[in-house]
Image (cartoon, rainbow, N blue to C red):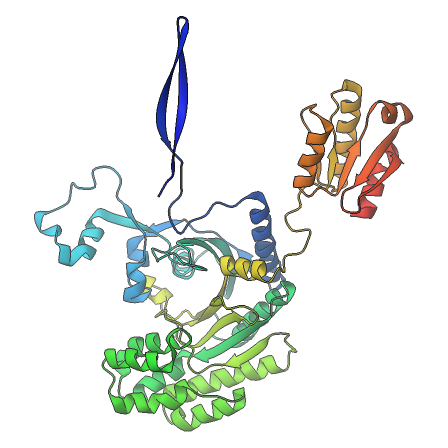
Length: 479
């Protein structure tokens, strides 16, 4: 709830002054959203820049799509639970003009929303990307490798590590069936987290294997319910998964058949051998095993720094995955999935372009931020903006000299600031210290006459006198 405070507003009237106390409400933002202070923004940009550099290293190109999409683009692409989490935008103008008496029915609120809302905030970046590919099919070259770093919105219950507005950092390849794309995406994941110094476990599975599991227990028509239940294994444990399966209508015989798979342990090869024994005779299972073994085999020869684990219980709840799926968790802190993705063969067909396969990953920047903060892994320089700070004494000649030296420093790539007001030096130094400035340059009367600068190193708490002509090189050498 917004906080309230009392503000006194004084009105002079003739020889007396009257005070009227007005209750003012402190502004706030919606739950699940955040403001970011300069240091936080700098840290977030460190994450974005790291991901962006790795994406471009692998030949991905940047695109952007609108924050809002037509609801017809979004609805039905994320499953029933996903549809409930879509933020819908009320039609502008007279949005009640087409409303009929029968539309207002508490048991059919979804229909009412469809009448009042034609647009919604994007839930993720993958479905808008599929729409983008179909809409711009004549303007892109296949296979198309794109990356996209933009915010998405979900009407979820806010909690630690889960927000209603957050950024995703996606990379996708469309127009290629090759499993080499999966291999390179895992390489990208490994490279990003290696640069961020986060130890991770990259989990891999295949939706075809999950399909085979559902077929084995005679529940092919309940593949969504089965995968949603299995996907909750880490959160609710084996017994909770079994209860979810019972609630979905899976009989005890079927649950018993899945029990060894859900708790399967061992090396990647041992788990794959067990899966082949259980599901290798089913066509979907055989294909899923073939794809998984290829990806894991290729990765084993690349010397990745991250752990790569075959996880037969990994399901990922989104309905559009059809092949390999990925999920990444930090090893040194419990914060949930920080990256995910997978193969989707049928997504663009929904928009009139069938037969176009794609595969992609998405880094959860906000959760990565939380991991870096929890583990204190941000580099010390992150968030430090101004590197060289000029004290302002108010003397016109000295100020002019400071401006010229500041201009030279900026041309040399040094982030430089001249304090605009001639206030007490103590206040200016406190300002520089609060910003984490490395160097403070002082040009008073003596320095101006001698052609020198008193240069304070705020990190080392040292001070030296340098020639004004040598200032830029001295600072550059020390940074």
